[in-house]
Image (cartoon, rainbow, N blue to C red; front, side, top):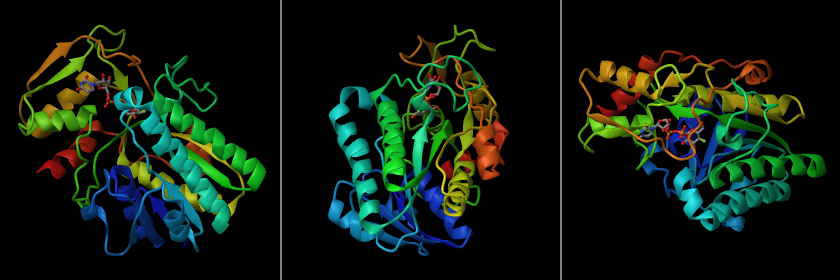
Length: 320
Ligand code: UFG
């Protein structure tokens, strides 16, 4: 059992992480500015402090007495990061510096950090393991990469241990339907499909059908958010039992194409969806799939959800 400060714990992934921590008997405080996180996602069993990571005093106060920090507070829209690098630098980079400095001030030694497959950029080989060079091609991915490297310096110089979890494509919702707040305005494939299915938008586009993939559309590694959550809890236990740091991919290792996602969604929802084929979207790699062997070994972790229909069903149940 540990006392854990979950920064960004009211957001989409954070709220699932909080549920997992509470299920495992940890004492949780959520620190969130509710800019994208939602009040409705705050469980009774967790304490809540409304605050911003850019507010160093408030952050430091919230951290006092914690055994570990899980840091999921970030801006994460890839397109927006290319238009507003200053905004992403302040929130993601300066905010993370504040978190690390608050850890030094309060003598908290362990941090689990929400990183991303976006640190790799265009894959040079597949599946991508952690030895693959980092070469982000968007500013969002660059912030994640830089924060990882910053944590490595704090580890060397100040004895902070970190585990950076590099998520591939996060999808799905808690199967017990305990999360009530749907992510606001997400720009990703499955939420867009759901919006089209529920007439919140008129159809959608499949970006690119001429890739050299199984059916011409892009392939991704879709990982259920509850599987991401279990990895965070295991990462906390790992940090507290050995003084090492790690960067770990979290994916299923299975490549699912956009077309397969659409077909599976039509099957789960039980109706045809309205979509068109459009040109490729700039910056999209044809295939992105994780080798997560290291996470399996280090954390003794494995994803429970491997069937894409089952994953989509947890999202559809949330919609209903
Ligand atoms: N796609 C469409 N139509 C849409 C939206 C997406 O065809 O309307 C396609 C994209 O072109 C891509 C696939 O669906 O081929 C997945 O796209 P997403 O936007 O859902 O996700 P990305 O793979 O682009 O990126 C996501 C996160 C990033 C993260 C990355 C890691 O948004 O933050 O996964 O794998 F870095």
